[in-house]
Length: 323
Ligand SMILES: Nc1nc2c(c(=O)[nH]1)N[C@H]1C(S)=C(S)[C@@H](COP(=O)(O)O)O[C@H]1N2
Ligand SMILES: [Mo]
Image (cartoon, rainbow, N blue to C red; front, side, top):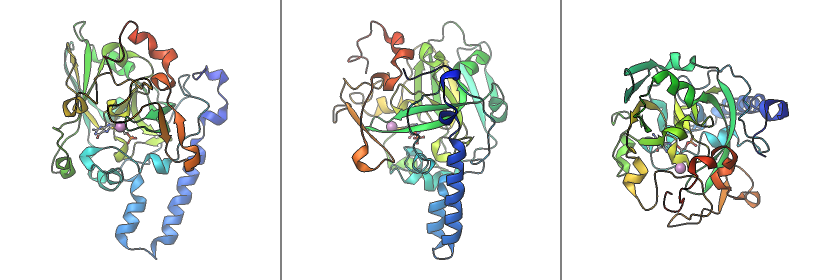
């Protein structure tokens, strides 16, 4: 059993951020000590995992019954320096260096499409819409690496309730921030921006789908999708759009960035599924980032281990066809 009731969760599994923040303070200290010996640019690279004006703001959180137990957290250092965020460069080390330019305040999220009334939410109002929870989730990229991350947010369903979608809304689309002046690296790939992702309404309403504002007790670093992103833990990472500016309720399956790129390789559903290989590699195992190399190889779990919560959403669907 992966998901436990709050009373079952040992406090050691819920409050590891103290440790991680201590580690970060240690790292910052190390940076300060080493600063004299290094050039300014090199120092900026080391410090950049915390880049972004609002990264590092402490968030008040409550315990969540939906946190994943029994996994060691990936260290903050890896989670914030090994990123996919193509608007800030195709190389995994680039977003940490470049995303500091993302203007995370002021920030609004526009809600449009099949809703009673279109609305615009200010990010600071969104942060207060519902109590923020600590949620540890396994995080599985389609490229067959994985991490275990302590996110901070609340169920997307809480937000959707405030959006008053019409009964004709069957899908929800997320659009990321895009400004080619801020993100000239976006031109390094053939992707047509802004980044677009989507979920079926029942997937979006599943309590595991997290509207995410922070990680490890603090606001999101820009490279991880500040100031707000979604996290869908039973799907490959690319379903989790970063730095969201528009939430659009629609009747039909919306177009999605990776499906536009390569329909054969990236489907709309993209549920983590060890039985359906990517055309170019196996999905049976994954490499857990941040572990010694001999311990990195892990067996990939169906629905990334969240089948108890989500398998019923796909009853009767052929998951080879709807990959
Ligand atoms: N806007 C945007 N969102 C994005 C991406 C991106 O390139 N641009 N990459 C996706 C992919 S492939 C993954 S694995 C996750 C990575 O999230 P992380 O950097 O917080 O681990 O973000 C997803 N969201
Ligand atoms: Mo990914």
